[in-house]
Length: 248
Ligand SMILES: Nc1ncnc2c1ncn2[C@@H]1O[C@H](COP(=O)(O)OP(=O)(O)OP(=O)(O)O)[C@@H](O)[C@H]1O
Ligand SMILES: [Mg+2]
Image 1 (tube, rainbow, N blue to C red):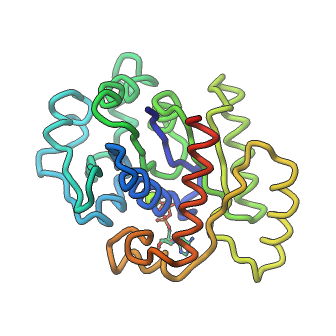
Image 2 (image 1 turned 180 degrees about the horizontal axis):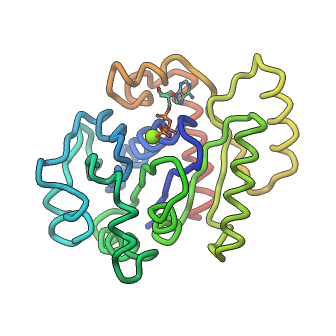
């Protein structure tokens, strides 16, 4: 049983696409799986055509227990449930700040769901806030998509430095390359250099593919819509490596 957070300080790097597809693959293997959409943008909820009930605001999320249970919804796929996000989550860090054990609150709220689900995937908003610190405590593993560019790598180094400074366990972090465009020399060079000498980087990577971009139209995991595409094989390889590095 594990809680995976799909996280990056940077926006638009493929966090939600990774959450949706790896969680789908996990559920398709027969494991009871929950996606928690903690991002007020609600992209994971959108992909699964799920909206939070009107009354499900941040206060109810922070209440935990039964209140959350009542708001978890089934997706169209076997074994895959989702807790939708709400726009009010944009102020979650302010609400957490006023609470006791403000950095561990989400861990306490999500922990009981470990008994109900085999694996939990948290789709995180970009940025680094008190919500992120809660996620770093709540998650067993932090999966970080990295676009192979200098700026993206720099942000990743900042995350590792933050973990060190705040004494979070940095062996929870597993990064992997995302939106890789092999026709670009910079992408090829960075992959070649980093994949050979950074043991914390996963070898599997996700290429830049139009099918993945089209998920916004189909509102289905690409691994479901295009089961034989190379985008699907890439997500399968990634999920396989995540399992072997984290769960075995
Ligand atoms: N490998 C890929 N190839 C092509 N398009 C991709 C790929 N991964 C993601 N995208 C597209 O890029 C956009 C951003 O991806 P996604 O929403 O997964 O990123 P994110 O990190 O979750 O963004 P945010 O920080 O805003 O939550 C989306 O339109 C998505 O469909
Ligand atoms: Mg997202």
